[in-house]
Length: 166
Image 1 (tube, helix red, strand yellow):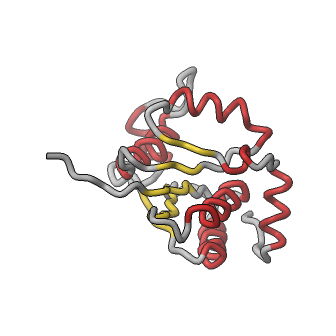
Image 2: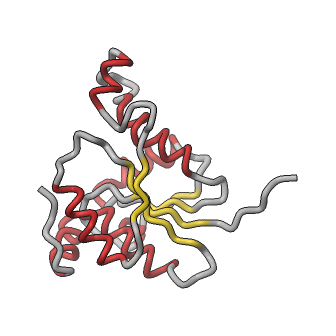
Image 3: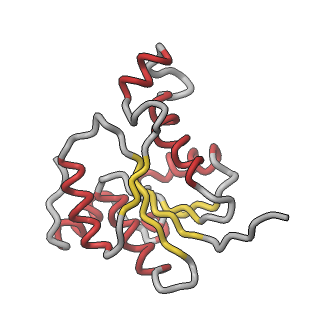
């Protein structure tokens, strides 16, 4: 017998203005519903340390904690992936992105989750490619649905009183 899981809404927060606004919109839409809303961040060790400050500021803005996830096998490090895989990037993309973000997401997700990503209207092509490559998940981009651009998101974060990350 399978375990019946309540569906969750998982907002994938990447420490950028767009993912912050997408998360805020999803929390407004789904928070208070019967669905659990989770804000998840895949830690990449080589990202700028100011991302941690930005994440803490956004956590206060969201009013919910951010769940930090990491590839334990590679200690969240781009350099560990490159060193062990002996490969940086090619026609199939960068293995560090797949391993440190995609594989971590897949290990965390449940089959019934709805995933929220911060693609903006300028990124419609990238969003379409993402959906084609991940057609096994229920994914939405509130920014595209709302017609929001990247400059719109920068302004919204700044109006919330949050200094953008370095």
